[in-house]
Image 1 (cartoon, one colour):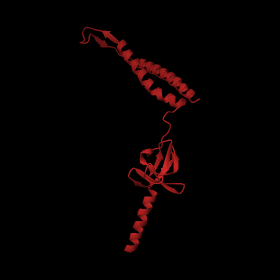
Image 2: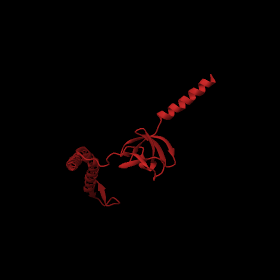
Image 3: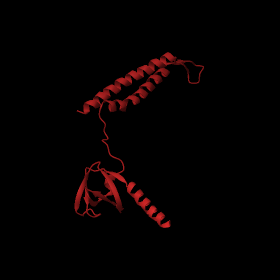
Image 4: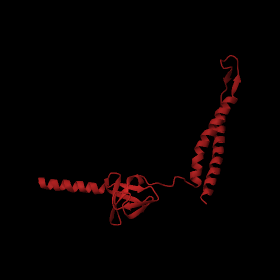
Length: 167
């Protein structure tokens, strides 16, 4: 029974090691696969940007990999754990999303700060020399709507400009 447990344990460890092989992505345009873990070693193949690489083992700064049934080495500084996407998104939706929320917040703040400044009433009884007037619900809704409309216009203009960059 103990022999079966050892065999089972070895099988389990090998299975875990195989199923848990580390996957990386190439983060340079072209990466050469070397015969030995040395930058002066012969090139036996290559990977392209965002290719998936399964690591067999590690030797210092080099990873042992298999490509087209050939085993070779690649330097680990050219790998990343995440696939690199194009960082610049183009299109209407991405252009709109970039500016809409920011412009809504900024225009809303500008309108409400202006309104609170406009509502100051001169009064010498107060330490500051004025008292603050009240803003009605109707004015909140009106200035919020103005902010939304201006932000939509800014978002649409930026979205169209971003969409035109695709061409």
